[in-house]
Image (cartoon, rainbow, N blue to C red):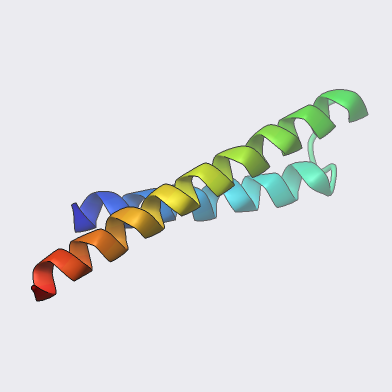
Length: 65
């Protein structure tokens, strides 16, 4: 479970960097499409960050007790 939590955190980091890239407009897409893509990446980042933290903390707490 700890490995899955760490993988979720890594996906969150990658998604966050993609969000920053889309937000800054480093792509060749139209502005409206870029905004939608940035919002989607931000949502994905939040979901994987929360899931990764829950799994990691849960695995650590179970391991200690």
